[in-house]
Length: 311
Image (tube, rainbow, N blue to C red; front, side):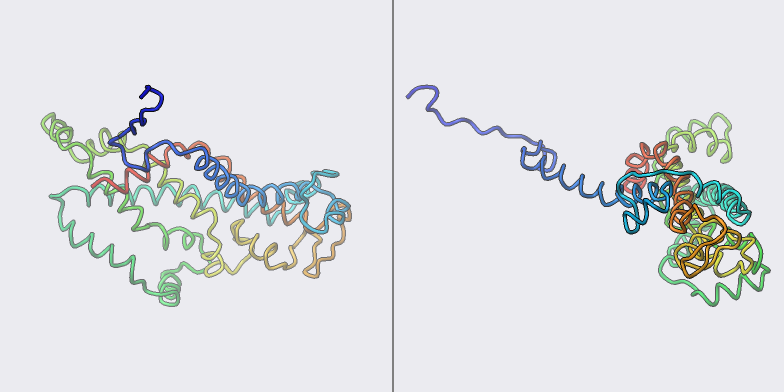
C-alpha cells in the first residue's frame, strides 16, 4: 500500500465547533446574509437622503422616493433653515440630548458604583427595588398626572427628568464596575483614596468602553424621543425635532411657514416638492446619529458584551 492510498488522518482540535473556520459555502452564506441585512438598513436611508436632494421632476419620474440620482437641488434645506419652527426644534433637540445624556450618565454612574460596592448601605434592597420597576410600572396616566402635578406640563424639564434613569443601563454599569480588581481598590485605599477618588481615578478610566456605549444609548433615546413632547408640550414652538417630524412628516399635517398643506399641495416655493422637504427633515434627524455612531461603534462589542457577562 502506497502512501497516497493510506486514509488521511482526520485533524482533531480542542476548539468548539463555532470557532472553527467556516467552509467556503458557510462563508458565502454569511456574506449573503450580511449583504441582505446591510441592504435592508442602507437602501431606505439612501433613498430618503437622495429624495431630499431631488427636484419635483425627479420625484414625479420616480413616482415617489427616488432611487436613481437625477436632477439635484439644495432648495429643500434652504427652505428648512429659513423656517424658524424647524431651526428652533433642532436646537431644542440638541439641548435636550446634551443635558439629558449628561444628567443620565451622572445619575447612572453614581447609582451603579454605589450598588457595586458590597458594603454600601442597603445596596441589596435598593437593587431589588430598582429591578422590580423594570417589570411593574405606574402606567401612562399616573405618570402623566404626577409629572403635571409637579409642574412638568408645558415645561422643558418634562423631556428629561421622567426618563433620566434607565435601570437596565445601571445594571450593565454595575456589572462592569463590580469586575474592577479588588486588589487595585485595596491598594488605592491603603494610599488614602476615598470612594470619590477611587471612582474618578480608577473605576471610570478602566470603564471607558461601557461608558461610551451607555452614553450612546441615552443620547439616541433622547434624540428620538417624541412621545414625551406629545404628552407634555402642547405648544409647537417648544417641540423637539422628532415631534416636528412625527406631526408634519409622518402625519402629513400642514407645516407653518413651509407652504405645504395637509392635502399634499404646496404654494409659495413652487420649485420644492413637499416630499423633498419631508425627506430633508427626516435626514436632519438621522444625521447626528450617523455622525456619532462610527466613533462609538468600536466600543460596542467590548462594552456591551463584557459589561453583560462580567459579575
